Amino acid sequence: MTLLGRMLWKGLTLKARPPLAPLEASRLRFRVWPTDLDINLHMNNGR
Image (cartoon, rainbow, N blue to C red; front, side, top):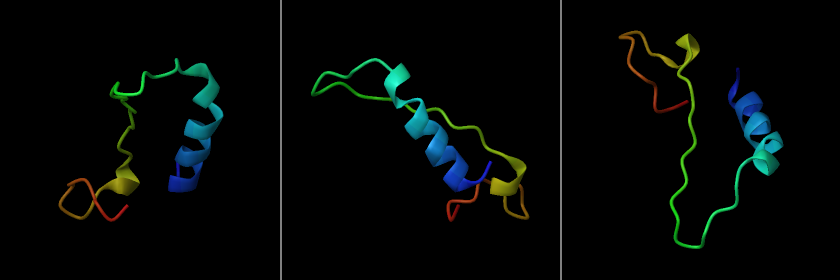
């Protein structure tokens, strides 16, 4: 998935997530795809 695809998916599933309290922490889980890796197989922060 591209970065735009990931953003659209999170936006579309927003209503399915429970509401947060004002000081509650949230967590989003993302999967690292092979296109997110650099030539040394490290996660690319520029992505």
